Length: 266
Image 1: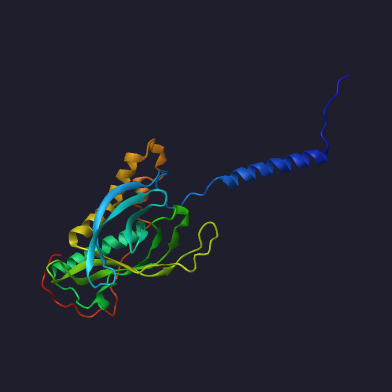
Image 2 (image 1 turned 30 degrees about the vertical axis):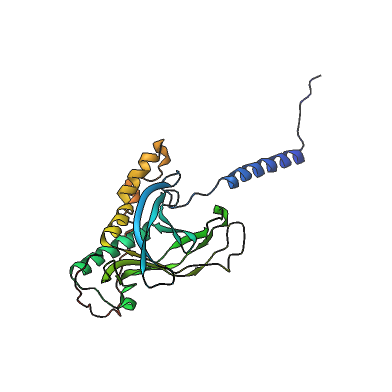
């Protein structure tokens, strides 16, 4: 005798729900991509830049090197350096890189015109302010123990004594203090605060960093590492889209009239 299998309505409903649950589980397990991602590849080391920092408990500055990397997954260049026994990563996304470039171009104009202000309170943020991102840890800490904050960053310049003990202008980036965010594991980082860090660049040093911020250069490096080429998610036209123009940095309306200074090279 021939038997025909007929599932009961209740069994079919349970089976259907199980299938939906499995599909939903698979869907939720796929990690979200950062909307700014330009390529699905690991960070690329670009090189190093020389920069001056404030010497601890001193009014003098000291010269150090910072390594420069580009993370295509979040479209951010970051600098790694040691400051007061802590390891810092300072991130620059595309809008902030554009702001840095625009600010430095204005600084070059003021520098060439010998129209730089000598008062630090008027010049340290004269080219604008951006919201940055930084992570830091002790030398012995693992990557998972890094703290993260989103400090304000002032872009301007200041005068500091150089090796000849003469005041000289430096293009400067001032990263202000900021409280740490909660880490991904839910740990409380509220007691941690990123340090106030000022970085001083000579003209040549700022030009070196600006070259690493260039979009065409960064995409060229991505192509060198993105094999197969399908790893690149964004075309040049999209990357340089006119829909997201570089921010226009305006000087503070309270700026004082420029003071003529003698042109010196740090």
